Image (tube, rainbow, N blue to C red; front, side, top):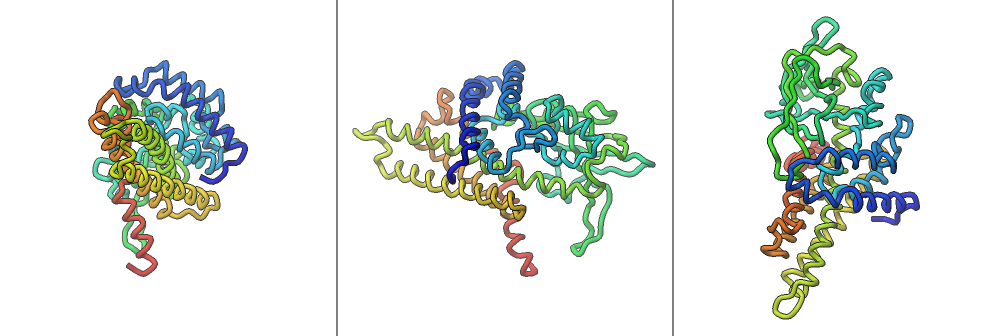
Length: 385
């Protein structure tokens, strides 16, 4: 990473101390319990508010911390060293809530900034993961209202939300590439008639971080529950997903650094045949490759953050970061298990937990295959392919 500005050096020190005091001590217990105890969740949320980390990603004008992209990259990198089950209690409300009108801001945005409400970003469906155009959730006009039907799954968050940002098809548009679904974002309160939300199945990665299944059965929504404009949902989701993929890349770099530190320490102190195992090329070269690939991943994140700050980041930039960093992390985690040998798979060591957690990064926020598709499309479309 390039030299840090003074304020970011202070920010980094603050985050590191917060993680050491409020997050790391609870990792093992939460992984074994499979949930975050209420008192721990409340403590993380309260302490993060006290030091200004809560909602740090949103502008000062709406009550957020006002951190720029460069600063948020540092924040997310440190958070990545631990579990989403814990650091997600330091809320970073989705930035698409900035599209709220004034009345919606009072009802949704400001309460999220203050920690009075929690939201879910509900896009993925059982038959439409990364293929948004296969979305079956739909909303049809009925007088001044909309009638929403459909379902969502793998919608993740730390706790039962107060409302969901739900994406649904509200019609079709004719484009040069044929008929295309018109996607709209709706603000749907938990408790609304016809809206059912349940915890989904348990995941072996990030135990304690919940995923939810949402179903909508003739849910009647007034037009003032549309976020932004009707038909503008894809644009809104794209803005969030782009930066979200860069933050995934940053978190992957943080976790890879933590794992590499563990691997290096083990390789320096574990002895076989009278010498540290790191002195053998079979192990030492693994460490060298980890170091090189982590450096490359950090530079990719830095480049994408710079592009985003200048307003010139494209979908392929975020995709490159996401696929490279997540696959780098998986390689680092897997090679570290190999370096530790049998001990790498024992519950008494943190390696197996970090290994399990790392695996999810290649799947959520768009699989590696989808990221490669985005990159290939950006390369071929200008050539008419």
